[in-house]
Structures are given as structure tokens and as C-alpha cells.
Length: 88
Image (tube, rainbow, N blue to C red):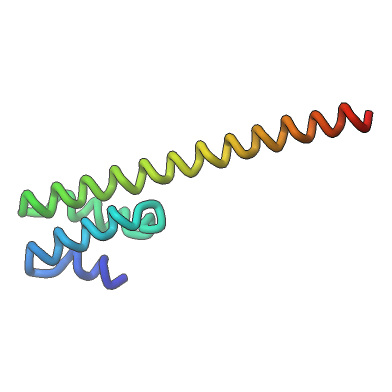
């Protein structure tokens, strides 16, 4: 929550840096999406830009993780079908 607090700091550099760090953290920073949505409406263009970029990065990583999980499930299903054929 330190980074969420930093998104509300009076210093625009601290706010934009906090948003950048959350973007670098990626999907593990999903807890900060609401605060980043607020920061995307900040009066300062750099803060808005950093917050928007962070939101995009978080969503991209989440989507990538979901796609990887789906591929793993598919491979597991193919393997299970193959083993079933061998045993069947």
C-alpha cells in the first residue's frame, strides 16, 4: 500500500514514479487498479500517462498469464487423452 499512498502524494514526480513502478510490477500489482484508475484522472499529464501505461501493462500481463494457463490446460487434456488411449 505504500505505492498506493504515493499515487496521492502532493509531488507529481512521486505520483508518476509510483505509477511507473506499479506498471513494472505488472499483474502482481492488480491490487492497485482502483488507485491507478483515479491517478489516470490526475491533473498532471505525466501522472495520467504513467497511470494509464501501468493499467495497460497490468492487463497485458494478466491476459498473458491466462493464455499460458489455458495452453497448459490444453496440453494436460491432450496428455490425459493420450494416456487414456494407452490404458483403454
